[in-house]
Length: 126
Image (cartoon, rainbow, N blue to C red; front, top):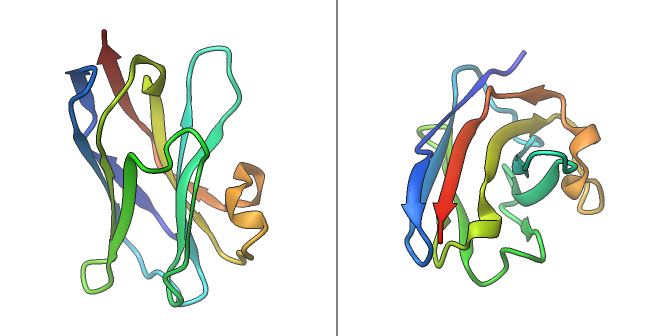
């Protein structure tokens, strides 16, 4: 079982940047995908970005393309989400998750992910 822990949330103003980190406390397999999702109150959980661990291919949610960048540190088994030009609508709880059997099509689907972190709150003030 993989366990992941998110860090780096907080409150910033619109236009600012934040960096979120997702650290795995157990082994991440080569075929796994690591994804960031977010959920605002009364809204469904949506994909922010995801990466397949071995191949390094990534996907981004439409609302964050061009503003957010996902990267991985294989040695540290860490995934970093750099968020720039933040908007009030980016306010949500951000979750990191592991998918043991991802495909390019399923990486964006929260229900395909097997293990989830506790989440970290990101609040953007206008």
